[in-house]
Image (cartoon, rainbow, N blue to C red; front, side, top):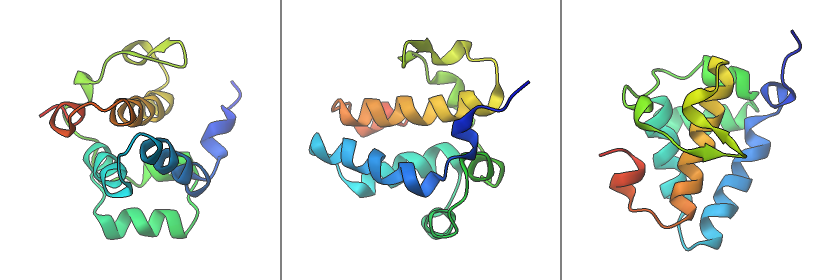
Amino acid sequence: MTQHRIYRMKFSGVYPLYVQKAERKNRTKAEVDQVIRWLTGYTQEQLDHQIAIESTFEEFFANAPQLNPNVALIKGVVCGVRVEEVEDPLMRKVRYLDKLIDELAKGKAMEKVLRG
């Protein structure tokens, strides 16, 4: 089976797009970072390091300290695909992140984005 190209993409290349998407909707880089830290278990320093060393998405999620135990609560459609039905574990993590950023950009309250 061929590996999806997003796995080889640098997280640092997509991260600014996440921030731009959020900022266009009056959200902040700090909120984007908070969402990413909630999902992955990274500290801010660890997140900054992953960006600095230009980790691929595969490396970014492989190095994540611990996926949040509430990820199963992330449901909905991203790019026409229902997140909870994505079979590939790595692609599901990528879609979880996409869904959280979408919710943030749509103005959802942070406590709801973080399944609080």
